[in-house]
Image (cartoon, rainbow, N blue to C red; front, side):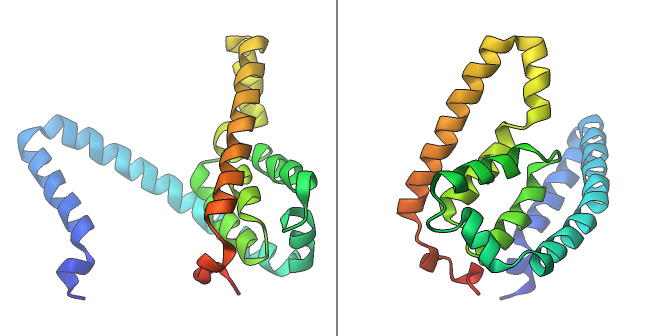
Length: 171
């Protein structure tokens, strides 16, 4: 693969940014500021996440993951996956390395989808703030509908995607 093809997307972004710098300098400056703020945030968050992922890989046995959220875990697996997704705070991109590690250790795809869905949309601190500003009936309805949707999506993906179709994630 040639270097131009390998870096096609980043080169295209640089060209778009340069065009913006000439055509709309004020928008270009704001864009640069946001991009560097985001990059700084990622540089501060990603290394500790990878350390935690390494510790998870070493300290948590594969058998425990299979028992808690693997095939045959049933409702217990749904509940545990949901709980794992609702407790942490932080951006969603932190959850993806964890999901990959859990898949490698034998977690069911449906439980990974529930974990990611809960992380993205059903965090406990988020629910508390939501209830305060939007009311308990709204929060309860959104929580229930989101939970149902995440479980249904997980079950559908479990049927569509088979673990053997994920060779890069299998040990």
